[in-house]
Length: 398
Ligand code: GLA
Image 1: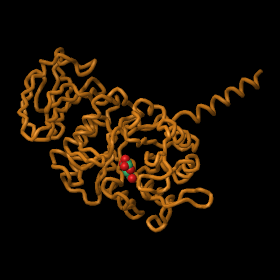
Image 2: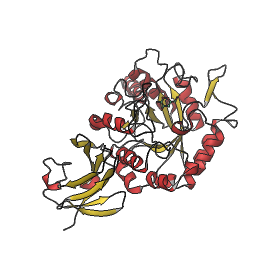
Image 3: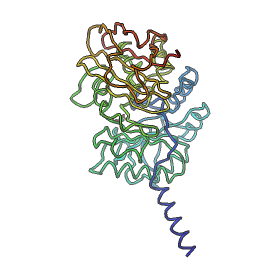
Image 4: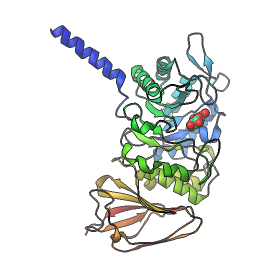
């Protein structure tokens, strides 16, 4: 009888071990850097080492950017035993040495693969090799896996991602699992127990508003697609509106600030995608704005909701820990928005424990880093074209 009980217990534990992702990871949205947006397939050992140095020296690491992720094109084939092989010309020292180097800089290391037979750049994918690849990554010391969806060959996304999630779990190493299936089969509905973040759209393009017939979305279109997804985000499971384009040259300073402000409001993973070796002052000030990062990293893990939609003007609100709230006024137009906002006319509460009517809050502009008013007076401000105003409301001690 006792033996039978133990058997059931062991089977249960093994089942559990293989059926759940690693918990306690990504309790706030992951932050880091990824090679794709700037470098595409042009990745190498020297690039990644230089980027690790830059993350440490530029202040990015101290600002919270933790994961250094190599995207597509690091892999060239498999050996006779099926083990994945890194490009020996571009990564002559091998992945383990590179991972150790990144770890020596107090950073974590991320890698990329694909649920299909090939990656999006036609490199070997993990289909049929999931458990073997996961063991390899674990033996290298990988901390994060971005897992793409090209050449899926008719697989069901949920099952395919579950297999890799199980493989990572079985490897024994806690690895953040980033689901990258572009929102096609609504991963927010099934991703929570499988991965820690999931892409919600096609790839981001370095522009505020633009459309591509071959796929890809500008910042504004991506924001629009996040509006209904707020209920699916939370500690350990995030909607991922794709990596940052800040600093890549396609947007004006105000557009970049809007991009970064809204990603913070959306509790989005903050994966920088620019060349950190040449950080100009304006880009550094955006990516390392501690007060904006704090909105993104708020421990309650709420994603902002669109609180008010006035067509070309929008107001987004995000409840924060401790009864505070972040509010972002978004100007989609090519003209200045002459904001004259009466907080007291709110008919809806921003959050259960935030009442504009019963309390007075001070209003802090998180780009100017100063208090610009209180909620018992109108907020008067000019918001630049394609710009935004991001404020934090904290209760005034009366
Ligand atoms: C897909 C992903 C991108 C990037 C490329 C690499 O398009 O969505 O983020 O990883 O593949 O090939």
